Image (cartoon, rainbow, N blue to C red; front, side):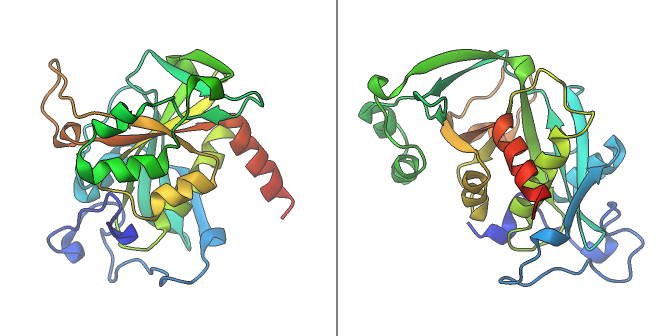
Length: 256
């Protein structure tokens, strides 16, 4: 899909939208054209829950503003000091995650067999083989179970405008901001995010460029104890990023 449509749901008439991005405006926020370098002009800062809910209700393509009480922080994505979108950080709904590493301690995908790839729908099998290199148990030096309190999910990466590469640039700025803020609990060692298999665009490329690894996928599954959500009918790529890599990136940025 187009990188300009990442998790974006156009309102019927954006001029009448009352979300924090569009309300009381005489014009839409200025957006940069494809090809213009703008990453240094992206900022993220905390916004309150009400603002985040209004943005998600108006502009998220498949999740509404019904936010979970496990949220840690909500970030607004700003370009030229104008609000353009939002990201929520929360504990994921998992109690633990098994991660795999090589001899240098680098994060690896989970080892998968040909039958694992073959079990995917035809349109996803090729994509999975590209995103997730096939490994064997011999490639794995260590596998460890990480407890849920050491993982935070970058959730609901949502834009209220159409702007190529804004989602990826916003997440890059936001993840550094989050890990250096008081909102990030001390035990946290990893970020995790799930990208719907048909909502990729440049986001997957950007994730891989910022230290994220696609470690596997999740299969469609509706939760029996929760209301129906259309998103749970889709496969999702699972990306994980070690906190050490984000800290290294922050340190490098300080010297640029």
